[in-house]
Image (cartoon, rainbow, N blue to C red; front, side):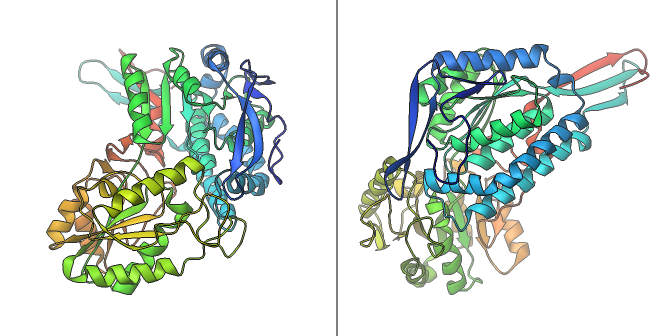
Length: 489
């Protein structure tokens, strides 16, 4: 069973060792549409035994198969064939995203088209990356540095942007010469099925790409499996800590792209209405369910009330509705537990801050997991709503004494994923950005640049995705010391 417009051939199977096989668990995962609260898809659920089968297949493909020794240029050509197969399926990927987590149908084609464009850049690394280098040594004649695949990767992706995040993990793994076990979120497995079908159709060797959707217990079993050399995880900081503990216990590699509580500093030179338009509309992107979301806004005290009023007007004009309505600006939260989580934080926020607008379910929506865009003002940066990731359309407006105090407040967080400086002065934006302990900073909004490194400081993660830097976590560096230079490299 799959949603309308999504043509997955074997939703009742797992993809292991180049074959579509029944899950040993015998169980199925049900996917609920957050607009209608109805089941729209069912897929096979992997259990512990299935995880072990997938790891064994990936291990055999890495240890004994041709993929790790295939030239990077050939691997890149194979990945481009996969992209050619995925491109006509953008409408399916878009429909799957809308059906599974309520992503806006109006935004879905752009989002998935952009993700595919980014994959072209990863495939190009096959020929552009310095896989082997040679230099004269101080003690030996020749020093060779060889970048070799890290091994078998477990790629674990979240539900908010399931295609782009999982595809990045797959493509970085494959261009490096690794094999991979895909473990998508149980809320959004359909995109990984489409990726597996593209890998199969492109002719990748058996076991290079495997697919095992599962719930948390089997995912934990996968991470524990000694056949996994590296875990690439995107998701919550809580889950990331667990994965880091398991990987640390056996010195397995891991890269973690985790949560955020990103701050936007509004400088005094930036117009109030422009700031309100940016902040009030950004918080509704993907219903606020973005790890890089600008969920804290910091402004000097004398402009605080004026900005709060302006943001409230923007939020009150946001059109809330079903995801497939082209006029909708804010769709539902992805699932019931996410709605309950956001409502819990809103109740918590009322205890310590001023609720300016929102905070409830829209009166005109009697079905689905909807919440109004919500603004809290006079927020204490030490409060729970300012320090913990809510993952919904809830914005905290925090007053600061001056610019120095705003920088201090921005850094006063366990997270460090994203941030912004709202200013007309690019030099000021640069100078302030250099002082914020976060992985990405943008001028005047939640900025993204495909192909640039993305990742976090502090509890927002370890490692980077995007660009050549995104490849480094998937390779090991081998040093070879020779008495003479070899004839070929």
